[in-house]
Amino acid sequence: MKIAILGAGRMGSWLAKEFSKGHEVGIYEKDSVKRTELEDVRVFEALEELARFGPNLLVNAVTLDVTVPVFYEIERYLPGDCIIADLASIKGVVADYYRECPFRFASVHPMFGPTFADLGSLKEENAIVIKESCPEGTVFFRQFFEQLGVRVFEYSFAEHDAMMAYSLTLPFICSMAFSSRCDKNTVPGTTFAKHMNIAKGLLAEDDHLLAEILFNPYSIRELEGITTKLEYLKHIIGEQDEEELKDFLQRLRNNVFPGDHS
Image 1 (cartoon, helix red, strand yellow):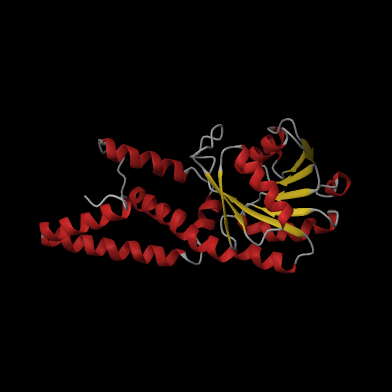
Image 2: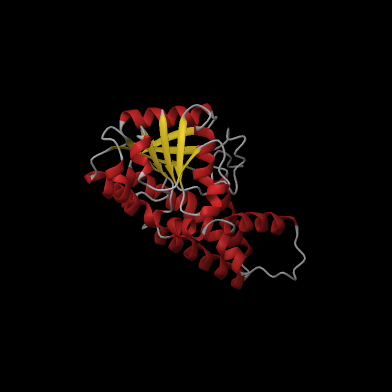
């Protein structure tokens, strides 16, 4: 299969490397520095080269803010039977595009960012394939991820974005709140050090990716849920109410240990 990839960021470069093991891969990247770092794949100097390459699958791995404009820009260079795909963390905008576009599509979301995940061993990681994707695209990406040991789930566009507010926005907000109170002069304990490592990994991500996650239309709901609980905890601490704290901690344990009510 001929696969074209747009964008040689962390995920685009990783996909190019993996796809090249069994497919003919070409990649386009505007950044000349990133282009020189690519190995074992054909590098396009201009988008017009897509027409000569004639991809069976095109994966759009650019940032969310330009994903749809890039799709519009490259439509005229693709064969009519090409499947187009995106990796967007939030699907609302691309869902609107797909409803009108002339191509079959596959919308996927690898839930393992290159910052945190061990890309050499993905057996504990997850990926999502959107239900509205074409059958051929669904089969391709499901097989690709499963061969790497990745668990694959299928959700609709709407289900995906609601879930991402919980699984991504929630921990991102918590890490950002922690980071806002960090003091370089503090001597860290074990728990602090673990949180610091998570925060460093998060803040090493590209600003566009963080914006994608945080600007999810469902994010405010999660943020309001956190602030409500923090206000309640502030009340408990202010009142030094040990019994109320005990009840609060038990509810937290029930959340994180749902099968253990001891």
